[in-house]
Length: 457
Image (cartoon, rainbow, N blue to C red; front, side, top):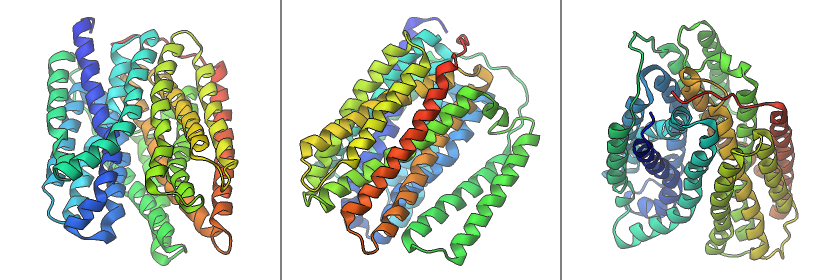
């Protein structure tokens, strides 16, 4: 694909699709109080968010592999259509039970939109170009973090919460049109074998594991149900690995983990995902619970993270074309570690401006690292494996966030028994520093690795 106009149209479509998934979390969270007020079912409040994340985690590697088998174009369009179907149904929901089901559908489509755009970038751009384009796409997450809460509040107050879902439709249609007209692929026509057994065992084991963590966080103790879910998880994972090792076209080729660059990026992605979700959850809790300030100021405290993320992503994209990828990932992870250390030094009299500096440091580091690791994975394999590789990377980042929010909740619960909230949160922040040091070590392992110069297809 050499036509520059076509490539610009494809990038525009990818930006739109990435924006839809990036803004989804913040805009829905902003609208949830009003949704509960209208639909009731407050006991399902967290499931509106959790079920979306669950199905996104499950569908991410599946769409990555299907994109390798049947092409990026058809799988991207299918993912957008599923996302739009889930969005439309969510907007039409008349009960919280319906909303949870329809959000699950929306999450399935989101799995395609969080993986395939990065795969397409690796397909149509050279290594030297990927950094800049990847930085542009990654910066969308920073922009959405700023726009999401504002747009969500405006739509809920001035129109109706239903329109936070309906607004996705025109954007999705535009992205489909652009991809359909501009992305041209030459797919080898042969009969493929879909790894149904692998998909099923992966879905069951992932659902059981995340559900068990969710219950453990809520109930604060091990029960028979939770233990059974963990047993199902272990059996499911072992069975999944056996199926993938024997399969002709496995959903998640185990050979990917023999590629050092992918393995390192996935380990670091998991750890950084864990740190990110925990910081996003507990810094606002510090603002409200320790310094006794209001929710508005906790939102203000987190705002610099999105702005700095945007800056870091753009810088990383430009830097990657001139500097070894290991230096970029190491620098970004070092910045994140500095941000984690800054949280450890929070005190009851720490001012909002200082906390904003800390969140800006973390956002800047994440903009650098997430962009660089995506380019590393894109450049580690050729076209036939790139979708599965990106699927595995996004899976590990998503799992890190899903596990992080559950495990950090257990840390908080344990520490709150007779100990003040300030001490408890400090303990969590110290553990995040330790995790960031492990991520730093993983990033350092890329210093001796060179990205392969696979050409665009």
